[in-house]
Amino acid sequence: MTPLSTTPITPAFGVEITGTHISEIVPSGRFGELRALFEAHSALLFRRQDLSDEAHLELAQAFGPIEDRLADERKPGEAFSIPKVSNVRKDGSITDEMDLHTLNLQSNFLWHTDSTFIPTPALSNIITARVVASEGGQTELASTRAAWAAMPETLRARIRGRGIWHHYANSRAKISPELAKLPMFHKWPATHWNAIWPNPVNGHEALYIASHAYAVDGYDKAESEALLDELMDFCTRPEFTYAHNWEVGDVLIWDQRAVLHRGRPWPFDQPRTLSSICCSVTKADGIDAMRLPV
Image (cartoon, rainbow, N blue to C red; front, side):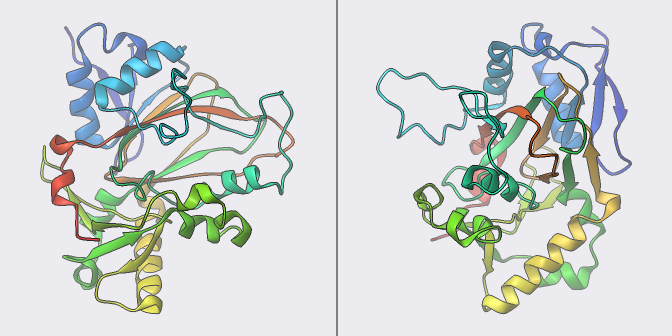
């Protein structure tokens, strides 16, 4: 079997995979090859696919346990449904620009890593576009692995060996104090992770930060915020980023241990829907090296 065909999507990270339909990866026994590309390049792109919900779930389960933030809220016998990043209500109408649902979507316009605020964070996100707007709505990625490797030692020394505290409400408060008060953003207590995530497969290190981060061990509140802002600014420089312009059917997969992401605005009177499945880290993904006392 010939290797999967890849083309770099940036000089720093990420590859586009061509010549293979993504839904064939697991059934054909090629997931190990895909996972090796994931570890090596941090982001994978398949264009113009036709990924069914069933194939989406199959691929996600190959990466690891499916993250289900609503497991404790689901009624007995109620099945998991694939989360949607969307401004479309169940009745087909569009949410208002300033309602809390849309403000929550706008929180995703902040650079972040998914699920740093829950006890078992995310390994990967697998997103496919179902409905796209006429303009805008890009998803941007930033490699914290490439940024960490290029970062001046004077800045690296200020964060190396320290822990970072995260809480869901922190990112929402940056958009709306009213939004941050909602119970869903206080479902989990603060988490405490090592600032640097070493990849257990290849040893490459990545800075592990997010818009949910609010404190750094050894610094006061103002110092923590200033340092986190400085680190975020460095990691999201153009040389470490990629902006994806969605077409229906595109599939984007990235390593949450080493990549930040954010959404970009679109005309909010137009529908936009992405299907998104996060997979949780396991011991094999290096989580034990990241946990710190809370």
